[in-house]
Length: 354
Ligand SMILES: Nc1ncnc2c1ncn2[C@@H]1O[C@H](COP(=O)(O)OS(=O)(=O)O)[C@@H](OP(=O)(O)O)[C@H]1O
Image (cartoon, rainbow, N blue to C red; front, side, top):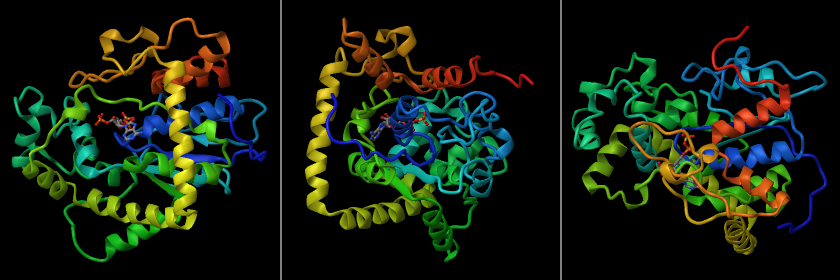
């Protein structure tokens, strides 16, 4: 599967602010594989998988460096952004990345995935039309003061550390968005995932084949999910800051693509899509499947309100190919645990263990 030339330089340190339900696990998997291949040091949360989310990130949430390591190279787990604290942990020349997705799709996904865990959604867990019921009277369910409700309104803005509250107007948000634009070297857009990846590739100095991915963490039935136009409008109105954030960074992305060159981008997109097709054909037994059909160790974590798809591998792959295909489809929690063990020689703590 090797193609293209290595840029030769070591990849810079990367902070990936892993927003919720935006395609972030797919990008995290690409970066986990990069880290493993190049033996990079990962900044892990002290307790598993997330940096004490939904609290704002703090340097104290990070596991100490492993013996012999001088600096962290990658920080990739869910967190709520506090840029100054990240700078205390990560080298000053780190690249900051994040990803945004169409706010309507993001909210639908958040609502389905966290329906029984986010306090504002919980009363609707057994409703026959829970999303419509919520959007009809969100104020009835939503308490801004409850930090557990961070994902219940403007979830992407929340993850990026913004405090939306009820204040929709004014130039304050222009300044906040400009500040975020200064913090991030690249904001990927899920609807233009491949274009975004090619921009990330240039920034990180990656080979084309290092971009191979399969779509991870997809919900069963999500592709057929039709939304009444009124519902989409209600989602946008409720998540007004996410709409503003998304539009702003969508425009930023297109300016980047223009600078990159449309013809160059088109040629590289063709090559990337060929690589993705070949990767799927080489590695996968078939399309993504529901949890009951996925092998135990490759099954993504399942909320009780949605079924999350996983992949099975083509049987009898030669060992080297099996190893790379296995990592391509390895869900977030399993990959985290694997890399943590590799780095520290012990299991992650599921609770404070010091
Ligand atoms: N490459 C790419 N492009 C566009 N969309 C993608 C991509 N990869 C994953 N997805 C969709 O993103 C949703 C999962 O997001 P996350 O992995 O960020 O979820 S999580 O917060 O880590 O649980 C989930 O959305 P839903 O299926 O609507 O729930 C995935 O289908």
